Length: 244
Image (cartoon, rainbow, N blue to C red):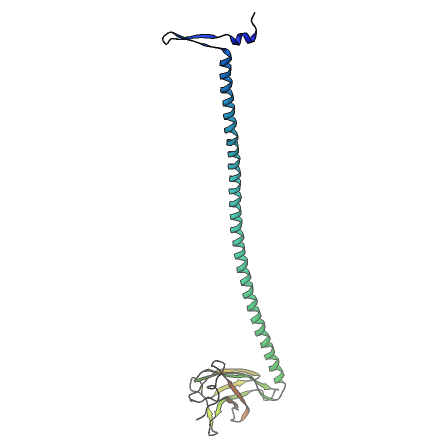
């Protein structure tokens, strides 16, 4: 009985019908060939399978990063929209605060004005409060003031205001409004707000303007002299009094 190694040493004879040639192949060589093919297949699989697995892993990571980037872009756009809305709200609040500040200032001024009116009503006579005269342009003067009747008698004041200047000859020159009237009608029991525009036809400009209250009987009941401000003109030498 032959042992295993002896069997491997024996040749296997087979015949190929090509010119009746025959070949011998020992089993050990066949095993070596099969072993080499198996090793080659294993090495090839070991080379390609890990690379494919690593590639799938990298593609998965890339997909996750792209999704995270998209979410960040969406979050950034959302934050920018919120910031724009917040900036708009802040600007709106600033404008509202500025408007309220202006209304508060105006209200405070009105309260102070009415305090002055109430205080003047306790004093006998006619009072000229907060008079203001200013140049609108070279040939017109705007004016505003408050007339207040002190105490209870007389209960009613009727008359008119006259606006005038003194020329170089010492003569009184009455000024007219834009309708050509040189009298501003007054009817009041307590106080009256007076405003309007006077026409100035001369080439020279007065520094002061006179306001006179004449009652319905033609008697003078009050008089003041007010400087004419250059609020709407440049404050230069041309605004100062120039007489011929």
